[in-house]
Image (tube, helix red, strand yellow):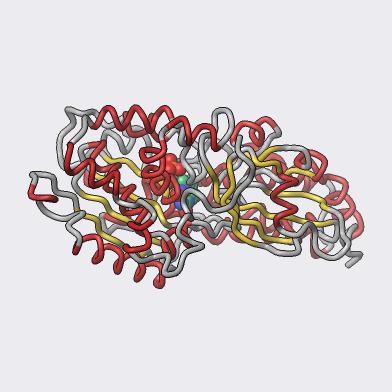
Length: 428
Ligand SMILES: Cc1cc2nc3c(=O)[nH]c(=O)nc-3n(C[C@H](O)[C@H](O)[C@H](O)COP(=O)(O)O)c2cc1C
């Protein structure tokens, strides 16, 4: 693994003047792969093989191998087929795609064009979260620039190759980030997740074969083809090729966003943020956005930031939103804050989620108000385990994993609060 250099893959334009402009991207070697593809029309399968070999894993949360997902699109499947680029970026603690959209939109466009070519698709819907007006404007401008160079549109390079990209702005819901809810929203319907199967690769957007990928996943593709699958693999660590954009928030001296090789030690990430703020010690970390399981300091301190290491430790890399908490954090209040978000964002389709999120908030409110009994903690735990895996989409996991893990690792704090009606940490 190479030493942790910053911003080499998805954010490589960041340190250059006018990072978002097409001239900057082209000067760094951008659109070279796409121009080669237009000219030489390689077998899509040969490109797919390289993407698969790179072990690029989905950066949207689940870490599914991107090349494998692409291979689910049957080369004989009917057309049109759609690519959906997921820039909803709703997971609390996560603010990485925004940098790609604003400062390196052309690498995303090139990634989209290559992914469409590989999967025989001629339309991509690029869905941005409702609050991302500025990023949407940057992507619209970039599309115009790319069109003026003849990189997309009808009959690209006077061939029969045609690919269109449409940027869409959402309306501010978290659930629309779930891929099937996103398909519903693009079709003009409320963003309610679909039951699966059928999976999007078979019946996705408008019931046609569809692949949904995260922005960071797609923006990694041009680099893989430019530098080779082996380079990408070497840049990361075993089973986790490439870089990851980590968004560090919470009680560190300098919160920030860092693109680092997968497998970078947690300690290195922490030191890049200047270490802990004030003099408090590290208490806990949520390593992959608020829906992932919290890890106590002693569990994460010697870990490397990659898919396998975090999974073995009982959490996950998720979206790379690293939320750092110091010893001054009351874990009861922290969980209450997270639970409120999930109650607000539940789409209400499935009973365990609609009712469960409400029960979690009400019990935590009771604990904080000093009206709880110890048996309420058992109820909290039971709700968290009985809702997991019993909902249409993974929102069931998103709201139960924090509850399960906060109770598992910090039970004495919850018991103290339930017994005394005040926080063991803050005394209030
Ligand atoms: C409730 C919920 C919210 C999600 N929000 C996002 C999101 O904001 N961005 C994203 O890329 N994936 C999000 N996902 C994951 C997507 O469903 C999907 O797995 C992902 O876009 C696939 O891309 P990838 O394979 O490149 O990671 C969410 C999933 C769930 C269950």
